[in-house]
Length: 79
Image (cartoon, rainbow, N blue to C red; front, side, top):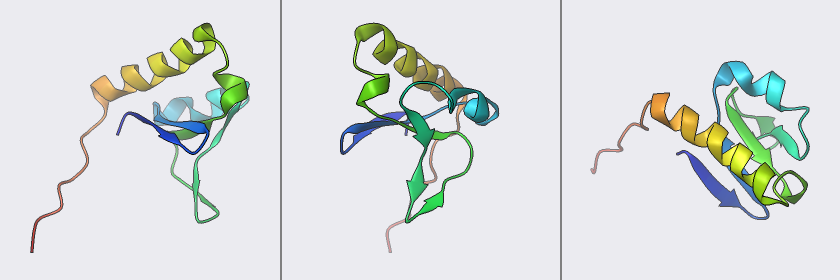
């Protein structure tokens, strides 16, 4: 996965090493599943962080840059 919409947020993958650097940015927070933070490299960006084209394009650029380097998800075999 590169990027998707999760309720009102943009969920994206980034370089794991960039996670801590990106978290203080406007609208960014760590992605959590069932109240537990996901591993580094997964972020949620709320509408405050994407409310204009420049900000939206910035986050899309982060996701697309990582997508070029990231490994694809493992396929689930049919039973």
